[in-house]
Image (cartoon, rainbow, N blue to C red; front, side, top):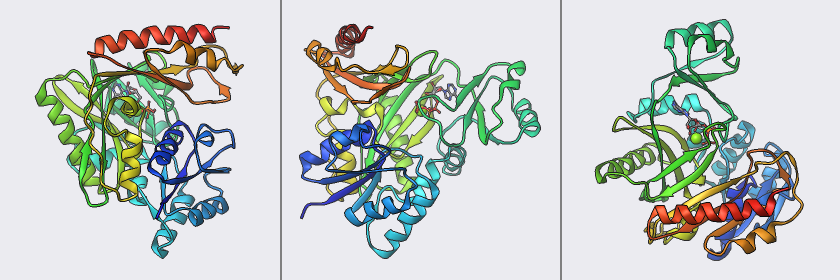
Length: 380
Ligand SMILES: Nc1ncnc2c1ncn2[C@@H]1O[C@H](COP(=O)(O)OP(=O)(O)OP(=O)(O)O)[C@@H](O)[C@H]1O
Ligand SMILES: [Mg+2]
């Protein structure tokens, strides 16, 4: 019998989950902010409204066998409603509410890492105004301030380099942590099935826009000594085992002075795993569906090196005028994925390109060339 997966959130992650579900014969409904959200193009059906509209969440529960997420910022009232439905046996929810509540608040998440002996940068929680400045001074600079909730793509994160800049601390519930200098950034995407088996993709290196802190490029696999590659996977396995949840998770890691530290853990498919659509035996999207639906996990093997580049909107904010076809035609050597977002805000992720190559260097060259062709098609 076919399963029906309900997805909270309708962005590009849900869009790709729905495409993968289609190939597996799994039905989908997404609850998305609007009927023209990216996932609306691939979902079996769409409920359009806010994620805390409990009537819509009830409707999603009534349609679905399994509910999952395309983002971690799920309103508390919705998580409670889902919990009640799980207790009644109406639906399964993966990852479960414990995992979601642990990971959706950055301070709770960091404390959980410490409690579970997982490596992460030193931090403290801060709140209020005067007390916050005093605590931050005591903590020491340079530091990174992070909003406990609601941040994404570098929004909600600021680096304060000296005592004087502590005046710019945001007066919001947040944490401050050590600035990790000269770090390379890595990610490990791994899934945990319902019976506890864990399957990890190869660690990747992630590169951010230097000013805007948005993920730009992913090189897969990361170029690492075997011992560090193994250690990154071991940290991911230890994390997923300690969490005990079902589904696919992504760890963002810093590599500094030969040491690996966890930056953050996401309870969902992740931008660092997009390359698996073309490069791996099982895509991260299929793997997540396999995990949450109780199917055996697929092989993660990556046949060829891959590079993924996000297409970040670099022009003024304006509505797109539909020259997507021209840019798709320009992509002969790489795969273009266009998210169909109607609103093009600066630095918004509008799509991505993945190229395979004999090496990550050759894949990177193809991605650079393709990005230029796409850029040309969109130039005003
Ligand atoms: N402690 C740190 N030391 C050095 N750089 C940091 C630190 N924390 C964050 N950064 C930089 O800021 C980026 C964004 O931080 P973080 O991943 O916590 O926020 P985010 O908004 O959840 O990001 P995203 O949605 O892109 O994953 C990191 O990828 C890294 O480049
Ligand atoms: Mg991050």
